[in-house]
Image 1 (cartoon, protein in one colour):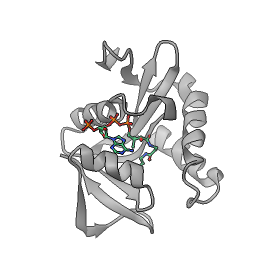
Image 2 (tube, rainbow, N blue to C red; image 1 turned 30 degrees about the vertical axis):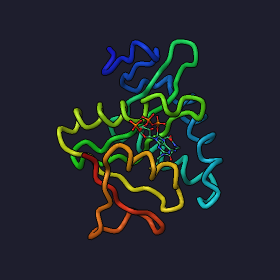
Image 3 (cartoon, rainbow, N blue to C red; image 1 turned 180 degrees about the vertical axis):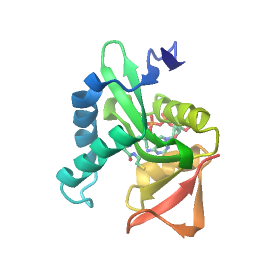
Length: 149
Ligand SMILES: CC(C)(COP(=O)(O)OP(=O)(O)OC[C@H]1O[C@@H](n2cnc3c(N)ncnc32)[C@H](O)[C@@H]1OP(=O)(O)O)[C@@H](O)C(=O)NCCC(=O)NCCS
């Protein structure tokens, strides 16, 4: 069942299925190529697999392209450990759509940690009305905590 549909752009957001694993990991590793400041991908992949097992995961899918984005959500904390949109599908509203669905699922404003070097993500969050939580450090060194609208 779709949690959100974008009729004009053709993508929908749905719950994660086990057969999404290869697509999610491929998308994730492609995106990490743009994060040279992060360590090797092995540790990141372990974190992702753990998050997929222990959190609510939602997936953006387009009929021809397949999986084009995903988000993991620690529902009780309204915290987003992962948000990734495929490079070719950015600026299509998918990131905002995933966050809207996650906020509905959490029933509370969301928070997340962003790498301070991740300037494009920071610009996207600012465009979406997110703000920096000045009195709380990010989850890892080199990150800042952001609060959603
Ligand atoms: C950050 C990310 C999730 C945004 O996803 P997206 O699907 O491109 O975002 P949307 O299309 O929903 O855009 C939402 C808003 O952000 C703006 N935006 C998105 N990327 C932007 C950028 N690089 N620079 C400036 N504004 C940007 C959009 O214009 C839009 O604003 P508008 O509503 O005023 O037009 C995506 O760029 C991504 O996956 N990046 C790589 C992984 C990453 O950094 N994840 C975040 C980890 S914390």
